[in-house]
Image 1 (cartoon, rainbow, N blue to C red):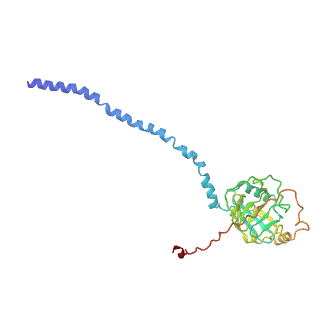
Image 2: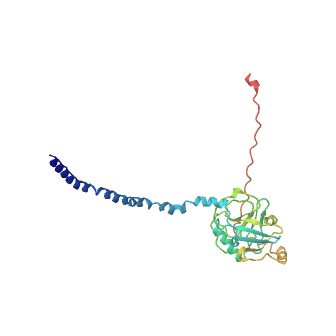
Length: 283
């Protein structure tokens, strides 16, 4: 009996061995399924660069806001000098980041000597000083075509440099104005292309009038990168006493350009004092 039970146990072990061998490949199947995870994640990773590609268009509004707050470094190519007949050099920082086409126009005309000798023909106390018209009538300009407006949102603060224009927003050419005082009502109406960063006291000394009786003139305009020295005393004296007939220009056919004086901002409405309630009414 013992031999029979021994043989029966041996037979059971021999039959169980093939079944165990068949169940062994299960772990390798799980090992093969593990590498299948990365291919499943790769499609999810490929769309990720899409937002990065669209990112350049998103900062359009932040860039415009940054123009109002962040002033770029002053470089020689973006420095505009105006040497005035009343003495002194006015230093202006041009803003090609805000008005690239207008800044390029100023550079081109300056290097042509266009502004040399021109007078400030329209100077209004408490408002602005305007120049850049070879006819001194407000209707003149350069032979170059007009420049389309570049409204950036830069404010009309004291010392701001704007381009004069007619009724057409895109009619700026060569005339410009310098603000004596802030006039924020004019914002987004004219192209601002820079601001005075030195010599504002010389701007304040420009002769007033429309036109002035003894107009202040631009003896020489230059770009900082060209390293042109300020005029000599003899040149300033000669500019202060122009040739006979040079101050009065013949009227020209055309539309005068330049900013209109903004309407004054309405002051606060007068408030009546609060009256105490009449106690007798409650009786």
